Image 1 (cartoon, helix red, strand yellow):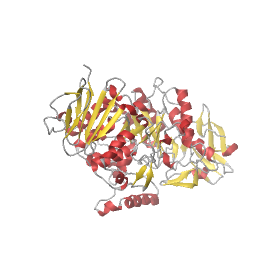
Image 2: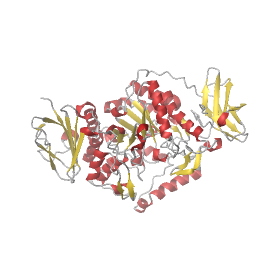
Image 3: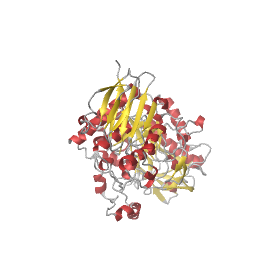
Length: 613
């Protein structure tokens, strides 16, 4: 038996329901002056409908007369994680998006952002003020880092302890719904990052209510959630309900599921399959696409294959290996997992085959790793040159803009935005933001704060020997240093922004780029510096993206039918994009015949497209 948990306000009353199977008595304490005993229900639930409760009222659950704790399914924590929960009128919002039809994953151009550092306001309202900017850029989907209530006001969001509550300092339930509504009015989809593999350490009271965690498994971030042990049915229901709340009640278009490989479930029906089945049923009801994107470290298509094919049925997944292959080439970094990359062949394979390690031996992991993605269309995979992890988990949180040249940044942008995959930008990269995105927290437990500090210092001990100092994650200055500058005034920033706009325009409008099946893309590499991508459709529309990652000028022959004519859409090294043409041959002609060759400057990209006679 499964029940809807939480506080559900009605006209003159409120239904309270909580799961606490080992407790002998559960009471709800309202505004510190009313205490009512809940009725025991089957399978460990406690429930009561209480009269004279209104939105804004504060409440705790009293467990066996011993402790008072906030509601595990709280929607609002106005006094942060240790304070009481607040009753919310779930229906008190005027949606104006009834005509919103959604966006399928295949059409998404994603933009990952962190609400707290995206603007100086650090709120949902601040994001709303930037929606027209994102539209001008060409973005049609924002992916928001976790907003579930966390300790204090500064956190990446992965330390959340109330999966249902919207971070109060961001603007709470009303502010989040207002943002989603505003996005839909402008044609922008919203995907939310959610964490179902662990809970944060501070304010995590779930164990006092019931067996939400298990000792059978462990995760790098804390206790594993109980998805397949005794009492798992009610724990699973708690999180499946959470998925449906975000997509139905908050009108979200999709969820990014954090580290799905760390969701431990060896039951016959994996939690991810249950989530997928539930979302498909909701999708049918709502008549608009709903997207589930997993973050996986396993190079395993089981997560995105259909249930009929033995998979879990997620819509798509992030591909870290595309990032690693690209990053290792342009930075020449070899530490950590980058030890598995660094050859041009790795990046060429990431373009063509998706997984670099798809059943091959991984020197870094010291084992054979991964399986083939060749039976999955490209649009099931999200790629990026930067994201919150790949920046923020560096010691100094340094962005690619501070590691490589301006020319290389443009090459990376084209690699992502014109790939056959679903592209995702990380906030600020489109104008070459140079401020870091560092790791920050605002815990209130002094012992926890010190443990986090020591953990970061230990992780980067090698770099400290080189004279660098790990930024203090608890310091407010670390947070402020990570807030976008929005300095778009210099020629460099303007050129980069316009370059991104042009690339996105090409992605949206060029007919050769609309097919994402694998048979519509061909890749070649000379092993030295050139990777070429040829994309086409069932008609005679062809687009070439020729990338030169080398330090020398190179020649590339199209080897096409001589009746075809190709227009030069972009040469990233030209003065038009802030470059300095080093070879007059590069910009000598705007059109090429199908059998001609093209000269490509070092660290640059040329885009060619067929033209109708």
